[in-house]
Length: 294
Length: 130
Length: 134
Figure: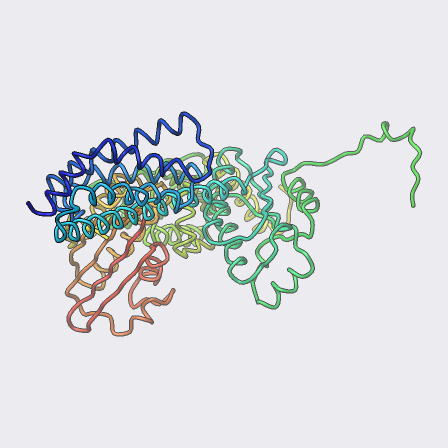
C-alpha cells in the first residue's frame, strides 16, 4: 500500500481520537474559552477532518491545487477570514492547522511503528501538507485585514469632508487634514453634489485645518475651484494663515482668479453681499445694554 | 439629416444637446446657430448639456467655438447643466473651458445671460442709464 | 492578473467613435464602475479614438476585462498602422498638437487612467494602452 493510501486510511481509522486530541490542544493555551467557542471549534475541526480525509483519499497529498482540495481550502479560508475579523492574531489562526500535527503524527507513529520506510514517507508528506495549509490561512488572514483597512480608509475619507450650508446660496467646506488626490476626488464630489442640491452660487473652502500647502495641495485646490465653476458656482478660499500666504507666493501658485480671505467670517460676509443679502443689526435690542470695553 | 433643434426664447436662443454627437452633427449645429443668431438678432445663446454624460476635448472645442462665434455676432453664451461627474472629469482632463460662461441650470443661465446682455448694453450706450 | 478579452472594434469613421464610447460605457457599467470612473474611462477612450482617427488613419480598439487579486479593471488598447509618433514626449505635452485639436488627447487620456502605455514606431504604427481599475 502506498504511503498516500496509508495516510488517508489512518485519518479515517483514527478520526475520533485525532479530533479529540486536536481539540484539546486548540483549546489549551491559557485563554478562557466559552461554551459557544468550544462548540464552534469542535464543529470546525470535525468539518476540516472530514474534508481532509476525503481529499487525501481522492487526490494527491503533494498537490493541493487540484480540485479535490477545494473543500479543505474553502473551510480554511472561511475560518481565517472570520478570525481576522474577530481580532485573532495570524499565529492563533494558523495554530488551528499546526496544532493538528502532534495528534496526527502520534496516530501515524502508532499505526506504522513496524514499517520504517512508509512511516518516514508518511510523516514527511503529512508535515509538508500541513505546512502548506497553515500558510494558506496566513495569506487569507492578511487579505481580509487589508480589505477591512481599505474599507475603513474609504469611510474616513467620506466622513471627514462635510459640506455645510451656511446660508441660502452659500456653502462652506471646512477642510481638516491633508489634501491628497484621493481626498480631492471625494471633496469635489461632495461639493458638486451639494451645489446641485442647494443651488448655491457660492462655496467657501476653508483651509484653516490644512497643515501643509505645497504645489500639489494648491493644484488640488485649484482643481476643486475649477470644477465648482463649471457648475456655475464661485469659490472663495479662506483660512489662509500668514505662513501659507508666504508659501503660496514663493511657489508661484496663481490664485489671482480666486477670492481669498484670511477668515471664514470675512469670506462669508463677501458671499452674502454678492448674493444680495444685507445684515442689519437690531439697534433696539442693544439700546439698554451698557458695554464695557477693555 | 438629423439636426439639433434651436428654440427661440425672447432675445435668446436655447439649444439642448441630448445625443451623443458625432462630428458632422457638431459642425451642422455651429452653422445653424450662427445663422439663427443673425436671423433673429439674438443677444444670447443658452446651451443645455444636462443630459450629456461625457464632454471630451472635441465637444469642449465646439462649445468654445460657439461662444467665440456668438460673441463676434454680438451675442453672449452660457453653457448650463453640466453633470458633476462630467465636471470632475473635465478638470482632470485639463480642459480649461476658460472664456466659456457656465451656470447650474436653465433658470440661472437665463439670469446670467440677462446680466451679461445688460452689461454690454450699458457699455454700448457709454454709461447712459436705461 | 487574469485577462479576458471581451471585444474588438474597428475604428474607421467619426461615427465609430460614438460606438467605441458606447461600448466602453456599457463595459464599465457591467464591471460596476462608479459614475465618475465610468465618465473618466469613456472620456479617455473618446480622446484616444479621435487621435487614432485623425492621426493614425483609423485602427482597432480592444476592450479587455482585467482581474487581479483584489479588484477588476478595464483595459483599452488602441492600435493603428499609421505614420507613428516621432517624439512621444512632445506628443504627451499638453497643448501640443500637430493638427486641429487642443493637444490634450494623449496627456489627457493618461491623466484619466490609472495605467498608461504607449509604443510607436515611425512608419509602422502606434499602440496606446490605458487601464482603469474599478
